[in-house]
Length: 108
Image (tube, rainbow, N blue to C red; front, side, top):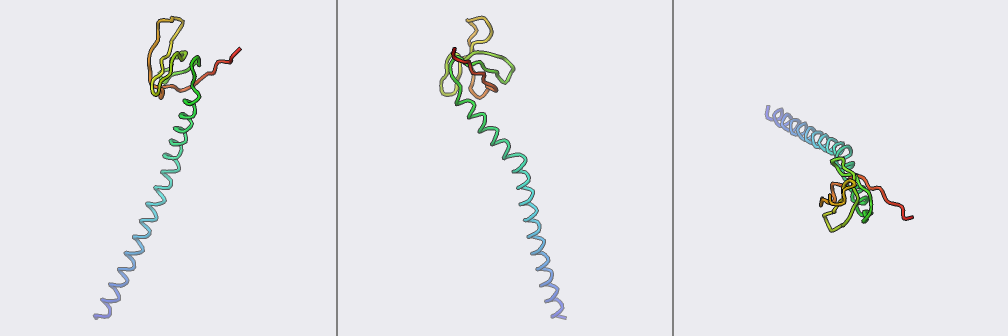
C-alpha cells in the first residue's frame, strides 16, 4: 500500500509539473501575440512620428491633431509657434507632438 501511495504521489507530481510547463508556455504565447499586435506597431508608429518631427523647419505648412492647418513661425525644443489662417496676428504656441502632417514648402 505504501508503494501505491509513493507511485501515485510521483505520478501526481509529474502531472503537476507538466501542467505548469504548459501554463507557462501558454502565457509566453499570449504575451508574444500581444507584443506582435499591440506593442510593436505602436513603437514603430512612434519612431515614424519622431522622424517626421526631425524634418520640421520654419515655413513648413502643418496639420495639427485638432485638424487645424498652419505655418510654422518658430521652433524650440518642445514648442512650435504656428500661425493659423490669413490673419498674421494669430500665432499660437503648441507642442511638437501635436503635429500630424508636414507639407514642405518648395523653395522657388
